[in-house]
Image (cartoon, rainbow, N blue to C red; front, side, top):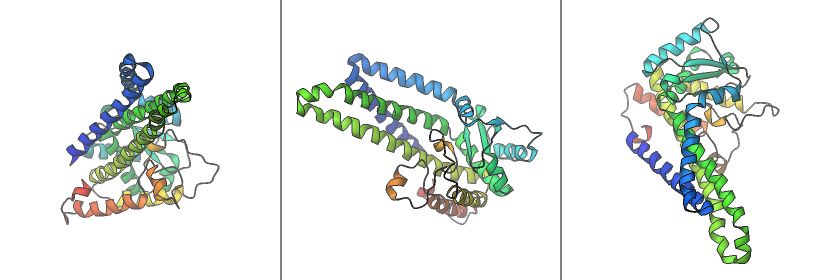
Length: 297
């Protein structure tokens, strides 16, 4: 099943890339497709290679030394050994919002960042579950996946808009010629965003399961997710999350109560109740009481 998921990701990414190259070709002519492909490659490389530095600047994260946070460093080192990856760097974000994220172009360059509000609101077991979840993102190369998909989706939206406005004159001269442009400008960006968000949600499910395996149980993570969901839904309205980094966090920084299924479709994270339900099922697998179902792989 893991191989199937990775093949599906490659297929989806290929389709988005082809669509982006087609739009580039439609705008700039035969050379446009090649230029678009090269630009996508360069942006993906830069975003992947410098992702940790970019995120540190965007969030204002500060390196946390072993002297300042010895217990968390011990926990991080233990879980990294369980995950069979190098111990990531530990960063802290001065924010009352309880949340956490991980980034880095590969396990050797990974980092885990914890909001100060998270450390203050979780107990040791819950904090261990959150850190294990973030280590799962590093182990699964989720930064690479999200960077590539986000770049392709962003460029596809930009080129679609450019294609639309550049063809206004043609549509004025020939009313029938505007249908293709209209379909491209409306459907292509929406499709790209929906695919991007769907992949983001699937990576959260995968990180939950992998993180539970790293920690040895799901209980700490389940308890932490319940607290994070309750806390985020009680955030004051004057605390505005950064949309550019929202997809990186373990829990959506946006209020999630009273959301319709359409809103969930445009969410970076799965509904919290679904994540908890899947983790509760997976605990029986870790306990050896149940075989691993396909929907838990």
